[in-house]
Image (cartoon, rainbow, N blue to C red; front, side, top):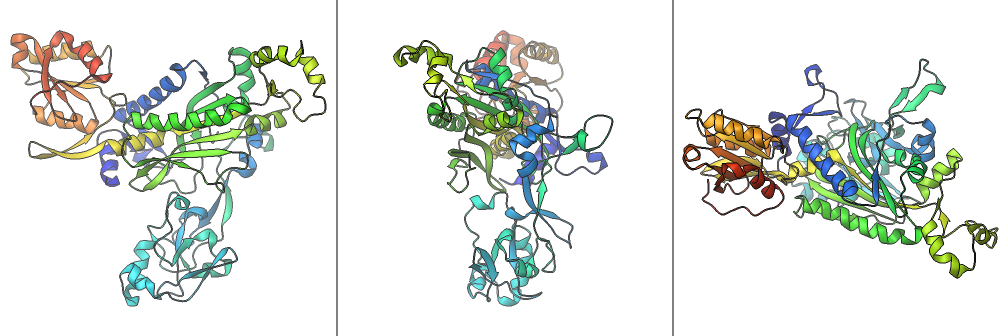
Length: 549
């Protein structure tokens, strides 16, 4: 799929606009238009319905965007939420050094040279003869070949892709310091314009209160998860929850990304759909396996059925020190394979950190487990049990413990972009090429469009009555302008699953024409049964056979 075509469609049809566009825009921020806001909301609502309302072991929260700064000290974001940043002095562009592929050059107008790994860094070696065959150019033309290629070497997740096909490319972080003057930056004309990498904290700083000093510093949250951990005790004390249980949240997060790119995929303001599922340490591995499978299947069930969707387990050297397992649900976007959602077994790290920094007891007493086992243990009270375990690191275990956490964390914007990419199709109908967004009906911004065939003979009045009846139950659209084929095409581009047309036959026998977006099949039903018919179709009912459009 051509990404430029999708971006153009999103702008033209009102899915996504550049933020502050009349002032030239602002990099890393996007506005969702009338269709886009419905699409994204439908995705969030489906997630909430399936994760929270559809289960009896998950509750929801809506936490504030600005929290006490110690929250971010406990989570490690203040001290460790950094990316290595590198600037290009020639182009004034900024890159993440751990995601930047670069070319090695011996000097201007000289062909690229090879890299040799020495002591963990890459040293520039002699000119490699196989460059000519790899690039398909003579040495004299190699420079012209290198420049446009270099501009495309910035990857979203280079460590997850196969090694570069060209021997003269490497990650900038791996280049020996003395060889950086020989490196060609993307879009630069001369080598040696990239600075040394330096750490850059991704959190947006702000001030709370009338004075701007060290005591007023606060941050816009870079993730929604920490609000859940900070409220764990409140939920346990008030929510009548019992282990295992989850706390879910959908909300905005903010990261001052060094290089926001790839449309809405990497933005500075984005929305997350996160679940923190708390469980007994002995059951954590089983719950991790459950959520790993369940979350992948959710994307499949909602339309990401192609081989572009994959589930990748992190290698041991990718895992955080506290994690015993992490898997990424990845999608092959036009710009490369990138993460939609991560499912992480985080152990007791998060609650343990907040207990340490806050001084509050965030352990959980598993009353049901204790009542089940106390007779066999020979103790009438938990205090008696604790006396037998004096001096042990965790005396209350396995009845009092800091819960383990399984975290499925999804990006609402990334999911929206993935479903847009998967839905985008170009096919031929009646000899004409049409663009269509084949959304799952649950996600479609508009569920049905109502059309009078012509603007006369009482058809508009009948169509309007049907439209007003439908809009009590569904997001629907009314359109009476233009040829009927053109109106169908407009709704195909919007991803509307069904069209309902009032025509001459409606006035004689009281039936209307239903049209299916994906197959262009048409069939007739009684006008007074339109609401139920549409409800059945949206819930997965079979589409009747009929003549093609």
